[in-house]
Image (cartoon, rainbow, N blue to C red; front, side):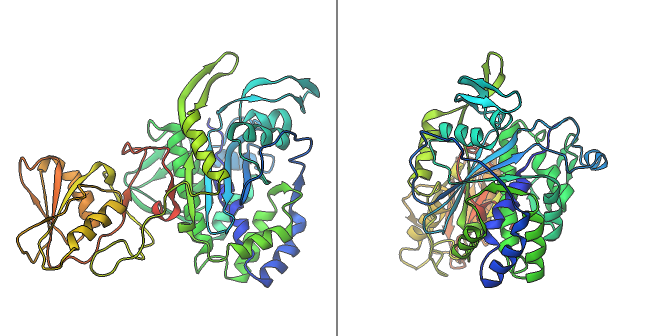
Length: 473
């Protein structure tokens, strides 16, 4: 059976950084800090990458089940033996101004050349040798894991956070469950996941099944990592919302659950967490962005190792360059706008659509007396991802906004209509692949949209997304 997936633990561990937002937060964290276990994550490390701006955390979920009973293993279909290895790895970069968190998922089977080390299980010295990155923990614990990730990414790691298992199902229950959404039913007999289409609120056990599932589609681990990122965005949304950690009793309960299962490097003490918490006050899903390391070969055969994951070196280098240089992984969307329809305005969440907007060609025509409206709407549609012509035209005056399309492109028309909810859909045979939007006097604004499922809809699985783009509407 499939080993458990640890993004649930990673999500709530990252929420530690959001716990301390004032004096009461510092007092509570201080009173709970005795529960944090410390590990030596940086002992003996040499020839490390140069430190950059901001802070980099390596968050590791460890396949260790000594706190889980046999009954719980059966209930949550955890089966098998723990590997005492990393079952999930994420690099988390907090920007220097503390206004952005960039999360990069690292495939657990990534090919790496482990540097010389002492095998902690056998006590023998090993020369450099090929391995999967998740085996670094088995061979050399946190220090070798840090060395392996720094070698792969070229990013200097400032702090190490290691997460245990059982308490994090409790954490989801403590915060009242986490909401996820799906365009189609999700069923995986291996993890036990069974979700209907639409929006569901998951308790701890259901959440574990959701983030473990990898038998839902052909995307396998890549699809699972994308779902994990969405779940992490939902956890951030829940913990930073008005019903989250503002309640002192909830704060203490969540804090006790988290701190009782976290292991960190010695430098991440209560004072450091408190300082980060104050800096991150006002953090939200919009402030977070998620990406997965670009991969060239998901089935890269290595003698003695079997199938590994080989990175796309050039694209991965560009990704980690942005972390080192403290730059966003995803360009910020333009903001602003008004009732004239000039943009997404203050919309915090995007509407999921069936066809990715970048696949939809759009011609905008202005059928109103408002000068410049066609250009503003063209730019607004482009900002939310549509492939507009960039050359709006003038149309006969009309009171009603109309979306004209070839019936062959009806799925694209429905996706475009989500951005223009007042538009009347008009199918015209042989209209062609370019959809036409004729703006009428009833036009108000363009709504933000996003692909409902980038994996299933064929969008670039390596593209970064912001947290607010992947939340349920």
